[in-house]
Image: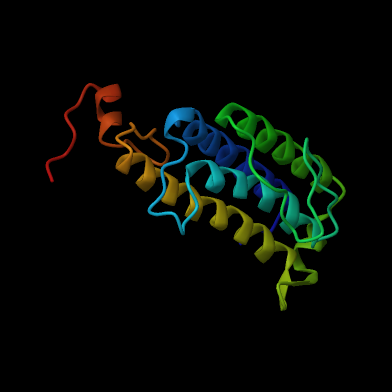
Length: 172
């Protein structure tokens, strides 16, 4: 849990770069990879992270903005056609989030907010934002594997990433 706004900001900046690395590893031709037609594809999962970075902080009184706006239903409509455009939108909303957090003091982290019918502290809401992103980024890497794409190293080397250290990947 976050005890200082600066701690969240530091973690968020690191997580943004990890997310953008995943986005950058998805060619547009593979962005429609999904488990099946009833599930989000890679492009829609990436766009969902843009939506969430706009939507959740607004429940905390943070007026995060980006190149797109939320509709009254809490969504921003269909994703743009390219992963580059999604990455650009994601970076913009992430920077806006950090800018708007500049208005928060550490006491806001202990304040109660109503989100999704529950009472959350500001600290817990920011933790959920990071965890939610990590969850969907993990889903994306599985879909990338299914599409035959190399997966970037995020928290440690992926199978392909061991070569960057001059090592063979571990045996499975």
